[in-house]
Amino acid sequence: MRRRKRHNVPMANAKEASTRRSVMKNLATGVGAAVVTAPKTAMPTLPSPAGTSPDGPDLLVTQFGARGDGATDDTVAFERAIAAAMQAGRRLRIPAGRYRITRTLTITRGIRVEGDGIERSVLLGAVIGGGPVLQFHAQATDSIMGPMLSGLWLDCAHGTGPCDGIRLSTGGQGAALHQAVVRDLFITNVAVGLALSGVVYRSMFDNITIAGIVAQYGVYCDKGFEDVTYNSFSNIEVTNVADGAHAFWIHSNHSNFSNLTSDGCSYFSSPGGTIRNLAVEGISARHPASATLLRFNQVQAAQGINLINIDPRRCACGIQVVGQAVVLQAIRCFGQQPLRLLELDPQSEGVIAGIQTERPAAMLEDYIPSETLRRWVVQAARSVTRRTSC
Image (cartoon, rainbow, N blue to C red; front, side):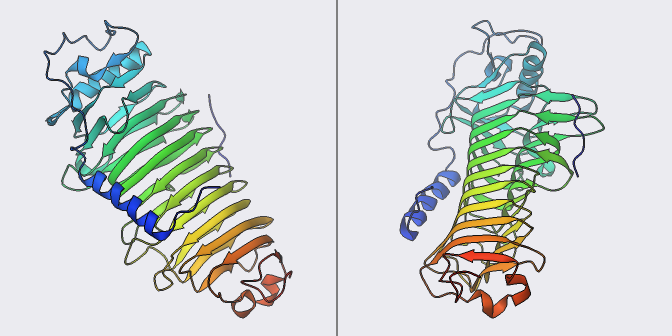
């Protein structure tokens, strides 16, 4: 199958957010403590890659030699298990354990890969060169439909430096990857947590936490961007974003984003797409990637944007908007806030409906040219404009 290339989350207060993030950070740095390791029993006879599980329809990585003891290099065993699952078209299960992975595991078929839960099934990423621990990849003229990944913890700082977590990609003319489901994951201490490139469409990414340290990007789609379209990103948190890094940096046409939280700068480019319920709880980096906290490029509608304790010395601007026929609705600032809440591109136009700030804010009329403001309808925003409508 070929694709044409196409040109109310409850708000926590600062103390609650700090406590929650502290718990996650401690959990991320103590990855081995809460994990149930695989029982030390005799290993069963290993089937060939064409074999099937003697216990039912699922294949287990432990049947191919994976020990899950946190010390043994389980890469070869995983590669054998993946090859068998792809050939047999069966689900691949990763039982409770800590599995050391030293090179990227590549899946080229639409199989299911499931762990026993993020507190039980852990991949210790030690990928040389910093590539992803696991990737779904469609080669030229190939189409991967319906791959699934769930129930895992990927801790990516067990090599000489942080590696990437997960990548979905295509390469070559006619390649496509669609209807993927990636969910219920905990990804820690990464260069890039989740990356998309090539032709990736109609896929769902849900209930994913990217924490520990995020050295470059939490969720990333830009390099190799071709046709990342009609995707859904929901219930994703990116926390502990490092200096110069971004929580989200995404080019994806007609994609929708909901219930996102972070503590770093983000960029969203999604013509025809929407953002609903996005919260930024402070800035973890001493030197953020940008003086602008959020940049929306051609996003059709953004609703429920919450900025919580944003140090204006780190990010002077809250939201920058580029695009026409844009709707911004229900923007809230709690605690500290940027000096300028909105920056509007000179050619942008749309509707701003509802802005509330806890502290006095700079008036839009004081720093946005009048010819730009005339392109916008501004309502219920007395905290940032001298007029109730303009």
